[in-house]
Length: 186
Image (tube, rainbow, N blue to C red):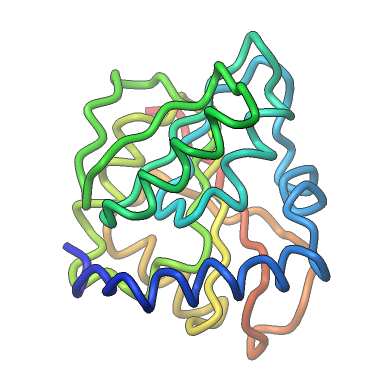
């Protein structure tokens, strides 16, 4: 489903870059804009080194759960190390490129940050989000290579289950806009 997992050196470089990105654009602020609440169940799909998964686990608290999914074994390994060091009990990893094996309608929020452009065929992945999201659940998307029109087109091509909320942010031509989709009642 994803073009190819990156090699070890590329993954390390990407993780190092994320440290700088997260310093200037703290993940917690983005997660608060998404509306993650205490007790929520969250899937961070394409979690990378856990930049958003770990703060999400703190936001949902002990009554919520976060699932960090990635295709790269180094990503899963990195997140597991961080979880152990920080003694986080509500974050679980999933090694996958599509199917999560999460129960139907069990997730409140799916985070799809900086990965949509990497999918060869995004339709099965987006349909998986439709399957696992609760009615009125949220699919939050940021992509630095796709503008708003391309993201909306890609999501709507896969399923009509998601409706874009007006985020009131950057113009259609801007990259890295946070787009929030609500799952419609089935």
